[in-house]
Image (cartoon, rainbow, N blue to C red; front, side, top):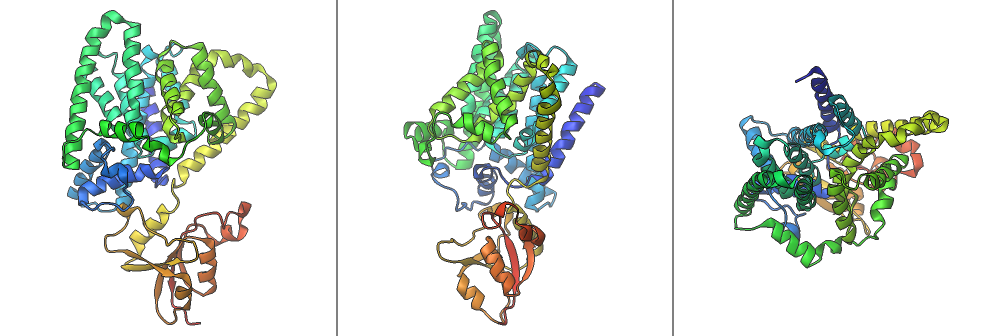
Length: 475
């Protein structure tokens, strides 16, 4: 391995350790409940209360939970019990898979027209990794992320004849972790056929052998963990497509991904990447990136229910498209406004968002879970219930000690209790202010008091403010 390759991977590893350490929790509940909690169900046999029809009807593949389940056994042998240490490892494992897959993919120059040297491959890899949302996405234990890592690894091996069966197996793992990846996988086969029919049949046979082995592996793992013979891709297709269950979660207009890409993409950065995506497709309609992204984008637009995370596969590839288009946008750098104002503005915005997502938890209440796990020995904690406000529930059971109970109790009754020690967990500023006035001792709060007093943008009443109190109210 050359020094430049080693340095590039060291930089990626450093970024991964930082973002995986700080970016605790989940971006979307599915990231936790369909992977970590599903793994915990297979481990303990106790069904999570958040599990719904999707688990009961077995539409979730178990490959990703099975990988984490294997390491749970390893941690058990090492006497490591902390779920926070283990979840950090799972984030770093998934980050490493996606990052190394992307690294190898960027160095597979058979796919690209304008990346012609190892130095340029290093450059585009770092360019992608420093886009503010990429490290954040790669640190997620979501099926979208792990499937992307498997896909990049598989694609990077396509032009290595001795590793074609392994490539096919990895394509199957990509599909097994997220069924929608069947679209770019299928388009990869068609693109290889389009590029070289004579070589394809020999290549394709080995890829299909590896793919078949992978699908059989998925079938046996799913059947073993669900304890009955089942084919989860068919279950998923039957429920979400034939029965249209997916639309029960909301239907969105056709332009959803266009507007959300800008809104969630940090304004000008999202706009630049959106334009790059369409310009690249116009300029390079026969390219590999066009073949795998156009159908993926179109099919997701035809589905009524849309979420930004569904297009993570495309969002990670758009900086690569922007890099490939550099011969078109380089001349514009001579423009004084673009060179002196616009580009510095974009870089500053990117750096600010990059630092924020790398150093902040993805789900802020996870810090409360960590506090309770490490500092609270009580087996019973009260949580207020009032008006239309439902009682708080510690839904992330993986991070909760087995003997801890969160007991709902009427808020007025809690405030009237006298001369009796109480341990209380609250989640709103209204509750926070009441128990603070009652003289309860604050042991933990999502936000420090000075931020609550400063109250920027009047965020207090809108934010989830988890706080742990120890009370002995005498008045």
